[in-house]
Length: 356
Ligand code: DOR
Ligand code: ZN
Image (cartoon, rainbow, N blue to C red; front, top):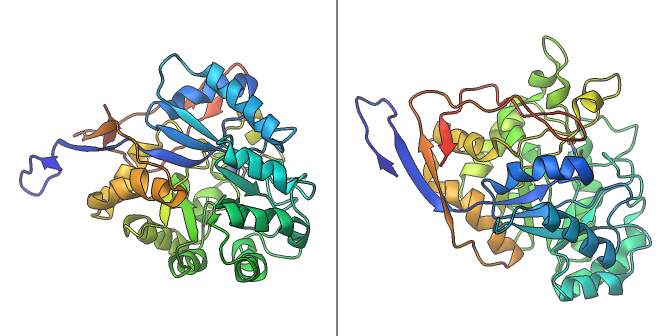
């Protein structure tokens, strides 16, 4: 870091890192897609695009068509590559997955336990029914991204990740040890420990918002729907464990923003949608977390190196330069889309970093 230091005060500083990737992103479709896409391409070179559209992206043909819609919403020469995923259902054809992966149409397959989150109704009810697909994926090295929560109504919403790890993820890994798995948006200390000790075939994405908020931010002193997401933010000790994992440099933790836009009307209502929209300020917020943890040296690993290595992809060639300003940066409170306004994540702390 090129830093002019004076009297212990943080001064203007610049950090240049390889351009980051976002390993978990919701881009939606139509007016929301064209509204939110510019926010992600500003800082990210690639994003793993989630398939939970309505209807979901279930076949190679769906993924190809969705990729074309994203590409036609991109400005010319954006340099941005959407990496596609398939939505795993109990009728997914192993051969369709193998062909889509072999042809480079998809990068991964996403497992949503049915009923666990937004648009997960077509997801998996019984993991044993998708074993042939998962075995085929293990054979060809196609990674499985999992929404790691049980949807059971008798399991407390704050326990759904740890119960998933114990009852679903761990048995699955024992049955198919070669399957490469990403525990998406890990939110608990137990999840961090499980992934940290899990060996080379297991990784986790961490979101921006789970590094910055705990459940008090959502619930104490008034309910804040724009902090509501799934998995829901947990106690402070879990947030601290996530921060420790993110800054650790451990190669199997990397950024997946889970930036999930919903229009204001769908968030500020009696039964609001889950999702936090962080695409606009994700990279500056992560830089602030790493600075606050005294770990700017591992920022590039978390943002730009670890994910690509896990997915077996080359790192990006281009770079971004982050600048630490004297004054807090300002970000728009909301972005307009033709589908309606979308509220931008409020990190709740001053962010001093901007990207040139
Ligand atoms: O908060 C969330 N929003 N979690 C998910 O798993 C899905 C996402 C969405 O699509 O809105
Ligand atoms: Zn998601």
